[in-house]
Image 1 (cartoon, rainbow, N blue to C red):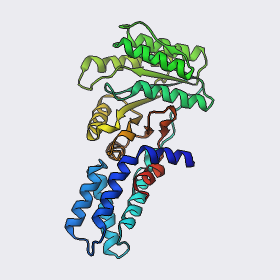
Image 2: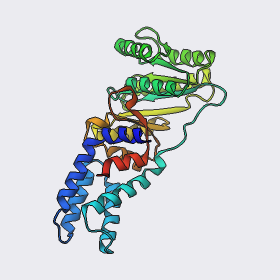
Image 3: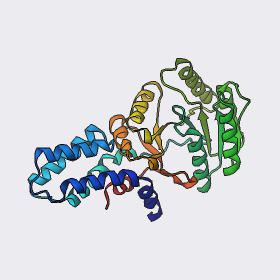
Image 4: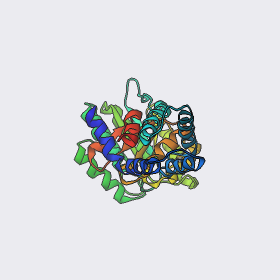
Length: 305
């Protein structure tokens, strides 16, 4: 799994640099750790968007171990934080809800610009590399450019794209996609939807309609509903996840663009609050840079020197 860890290490380099350098700087030459020292450490952890709750827990463990004489260096802190973080994230990995006797329908939702279409293409590529047959459905019918973009991705990765004209009923496209997946005996059908804010009642009702017609075309579908969020937006990503969880029956999260931010810790904050599985993380622009989430690789990439 060396190559997989390399992807995490490279993709989270900015976040790691922020954390490790600041921690090493704070504790270099410190003779005795004071309340002010712990306050600064907490600010470093929160600054990487690990979340207040997780930061408090990490800080509490570090303080207890220091008082027991078990640690005394920045390297000790990094080691403990790495171990604790992996344990916190252990429940973030859960098996996919695969369909039995038919295609697994995966519905991608999220706001504009979160990376849904690119994520759909990368998922298709990854599953095809695993020997699975995959289709894509262009259910973002509000933007003609979105339909064309998915078609281009479909040609690039070599999988069929179910689409209609600009302005067509998105639920109708989803229905056709589910039927096509059954007829072609595909393993996966990935439904790319329009970007929507949770406050847009009409668009959220459309999402409900898409879900209903998918279940009609393929009983039990959608089997997975993943919120795609841009990890580089930091706490705004947590806000989006929080709101979509209230209005959509999410089964997991995909966090994109973690390579472009020093706030990759938002993955931790989102899972800690919402307890949703982290399905995949985007660690770069290449087709292979969308990776299944791994708590140990994630923790090592953040805190390993």
